[in-house]
Image (cartoon, rainbow, N blue to C red):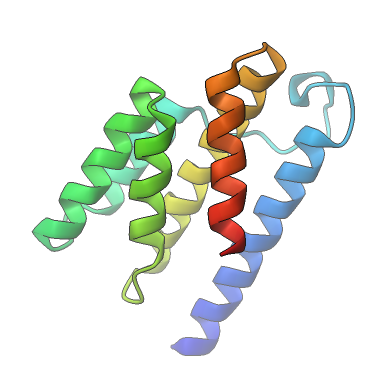
Length: 135
């Protein structure tokens, strides 16, 4: 069971890198490029996140609910903290892991869009997200 999970993790990480590179690599937006992979909208990602953790232990379910609400409300700091808390767990199912990754990708896409519009809060949150990913 470990090897398939590692394969899923590697594929998910590759997808995230590809999406981030596609969204920040040129001046065209993802909607202008027909070959760009579609990014889930934050509200949809938030819904998928809650669904993936329906049968999770209460503590994890509550953290997923907090992340979901933060995504919907564009509360970047809370979303980052909650998603990274969940992602650090070693007992995630493949569905849960993918829901967390899709939520992170949706959040990063929203941050990039907000930064391009001049939102300094989004810029600060994006820098904090990148720093936490490196740590």
